[in-house]
Image (cartoon, rainbow over all chains, first blue to last red; front, top):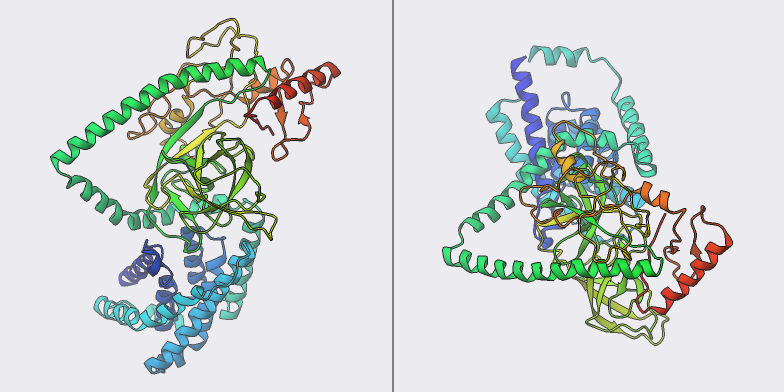
Length: 161
Length: 420
């Protein structure tokens, strides 16, 4: 039981760090490339520990992200819940994928999320689609192997889950 | 470990599809409610208690570095800076001396015109948190929120000019939309000749555009744009931008004009959140017995007795921050006592409220609207009929107002007051 609490605390820490990275101030050139770290970390945990991370957990994380980034309440909650659902449906296959295929899956997830972000922000405040809006998807896919590796090392080191 | 596997084997509860359905429905409900109204602000405020530490932590490194660089300044550099600042202080102090006299003169002249006068702003220094919440918006977070009495639609300045306006407040922080945001527009006038227009944000931090001026408009590069006071959010007369480009487009009805904001929007760390009373102060009030004046009038006979108030309200709000969770109302009854001296708002806010920030309240305005003929022009339509208070409907009043209006028109700089 004790290790369980420790584990929950541990996931929370990784997600909090991801949130910090998401709102990190960067030079303008890098700003457009800043991937959705929270979603990456959530996808990792859902794929690795699907019985601990569910739709509601992601929904709550998304709600906090909404408050953090000052978006409409429910925007990231909806997006993270939907992405988590996709991951929960496919986690057995994705785990067996080689790295390249995994990358394609992650790319798909991030693209889906980013398009939804654009859709909801347009609903709030109509704007023109720019291709630079999809840069975080590319950068997110590129950093995925490293994120996954770091989280895996930490997880094994801390014996979480 | 055992517990988890048993849970897995005998998994109960709603299926994953049901969970998703509930989450999606909840999200849509939240989205729609948040889009339509501000009813969810309490929920947002509650959640912001959880995420504020993250904001704080992300802001820490840049704060730390700026403090380090401040600490590493040499002795001679500090000395020269101190000298320069003292000179600057001396100059601005002497300008302020003149300002007090000019203000009095302005009040007196306006009383001759039976016009109203607007005075007094209170300010609060806030620090910009260096976080990036939305990559495509020009919205910054500042570290003062509703616990300091900050509320929506408050103007935000720095020492050079207008920065933006508060668009949302949370208990510990508030979001400020910069004037360069593409969704922001600010009513301005050219300081040289009073030409009024609207400055729209361009999405670039160093550029505003003035899209609604004809090709023959009397405006040229170098003109200072100040707030016109129309619209009711920004008080009148604060510098906004300097026109830097005027391009005639012969084939189009409007000229292409751009301006550079006065405020250093890309470098500022500290901003001033301003409380400006949107009500204009009625003149020629009968002098009330329980009201004291903060400054001795120049000419007691001709001077209108404005209801002065020392700014104890904001400092009061700050002193009670620890105990009260709700935002403290910054408007206090005019008839309430004028006891509290203007205290310093924050340790680093030195010169905010001590310059006799006078605040007129709604009650005073409402009371005196009977006895006063106030000239009020509707916002946005300067040349239209003046709005008269519903209380002053008699024909004599109307003719007098028309007379006063004609007099005002004759003057070069028509000062327009707005009222709700």
